[in-house]
Image: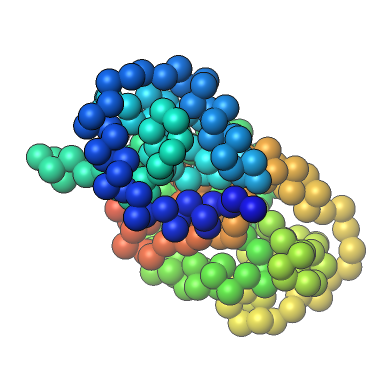
Length: 244
């Protein structure tokens, strides 16, 4: 079975792909390359294929990850393209653009709103209360001030049994922010009566936005961070947004 993990094992073909790019002059249709990628990786979700400025080299967005291939999809290259002059990571910037989520698509009324300081900066978070990485992320948030965090409780039950029930208990608490913090940071389970909760609606939103990992952060400029980030990284994104 061919999966994303098998692509990671293709690093040895990087030189072969590079040589193919340098020597090849043929230009294939993007749609043709798209179909070939689908055939080679039937278990993955191929989103888009783009022709790059480099002859014979194509950019593939698959399972929200980016890699490069030749027109016949004989080789793949995984890694970052760096602009030596500016020092910019072109792959990272391109991936952020391709995976960007429109802030307006987020139903913020379904999220737990936490305001720190003046709350001038904003981010949305999809988080599972029993996800270990989500706990780590909350500790990083503690180092950041002047931010409004919209937390969408996003239990992934097949990975964290019992997270759905805990998520509902948090939402039905009289103080959702406190209940969430107590549960995630102190492992104190909320005590509340059942109520109408948005868990199913949030799950539908997450599916639509292709969010399959917690924590996942979304910033107002569309930038998406999957799997968590240190406070310093988050501050850098906020600084970049402020310059736009």
